[in-house]
Image (cartoon, rainbow, N blue to C red; front, side):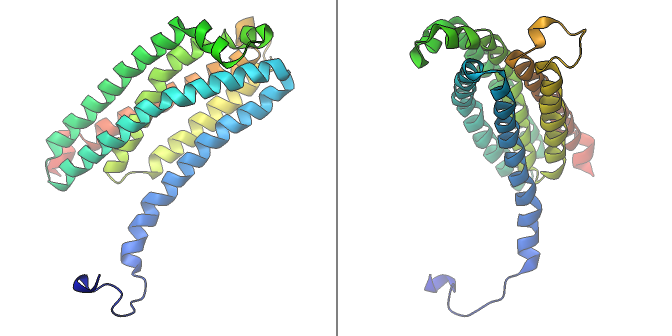
Length: 237
């Protein structure tokens, strides 16, 4: 490190450099907190529905987490390319790469969701041999199949916005959608607090339906925000 002048003399922390990192890093950390707690609290609520229902939910949650690795990896790669284009002052390329990443991630998620649905019984039987648990998990596979597309769109959009150094607004969107619509709506539907809702919205299906709706809302809002941030007239200003 000596040629670079590092560690050769003491220097106080430079808050002008640290402040932008905190402005971006703290909301990003809160985003992960919101995502993790939403799934954790959903599992805690579902424990009231019985051990077999909880076991089926945990299998579906694990399958969803494994499938999530693909759009997550693509979102990291896409945000890197978008950030490079922004650093090169090529905002048109940044917008183009962002849109391509969102479309590609969503298309791949549709394929993954279709495979999960088509292979639902072999996958569930690979996890557990208990017919009762498989019966509880089987209806939830339909939600996971659609859930993948919404999940891919929201994570791709969120990471692209981070390339634009925007993290606070996505965090607020996550909080309102995942905590408010996802957990709140799941609690209302899952425990049948509204009598006129159809029967399939109750139990663990209600929680997964609300979670899917919350991700659809988050994905829509994040894509709309990306459209505003990257629009041509904004680039000229």
